[in-house]
Length: 183
Image (cartoon, rainbow, N blue to C red; front, top):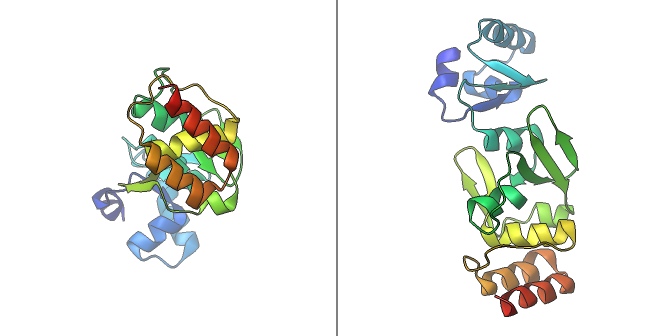
């Protein structure tokens, strides 16, 4: 079982993921084997029912804890050099607002019609992440307003298409046009 887990490109697993990976149908046997690997420190339990390999991906973990979710907001804005402030916290969009301080992960709630819309979301290895324009729009939508240090990487046409297709909020259109006018 451990070999199958370590062969997998994923670094974060739920009990259901492990059952599918190894083909184990007996839930008690599976829990027993996984707990054995946790005791032997071959896997770590970071949360009830969530297990990680040694050098796990924090973005993948954030995506696994609450599903559906995708990485966005400050995590993407920082990575894309749109904001210069450094954040240790992983920010994600989900169906609820939560902060898991022990793991340094913060979820922000957004409407289901926006959360489930695939436009502007990329699928990296093991997790989903917003593109830069979607992250900007998420920030404006969630926080109401936001200061961006550098808007030069952004594509206004893409942002406006996202507003029309995904968000359908006139205030966002006005904010985006203002941001690009002042750029």
